[in-house]
Length: 63
Image 1 (cartoon, rainbow, N blue to C red):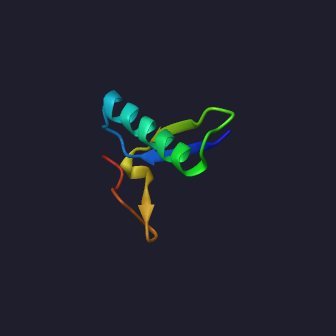
Image 2: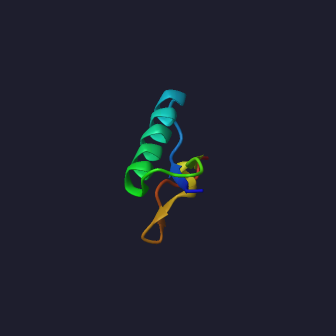
Image 3: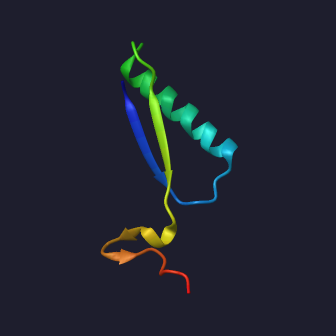
């Protein structure tokens, strides 16, 4: 079973996440062709203070 795990910052609506899941599923199906098992997509919302780039946090913790 193909599994895509996507990390995004918070604040996206249910409809935006649903559209993301649909498009990722379609992209995997387009790339791999017909599949015997369904595509799984996991969307992980991570607070921006838990992200870092280049050894530095994107946003310092609140407070």
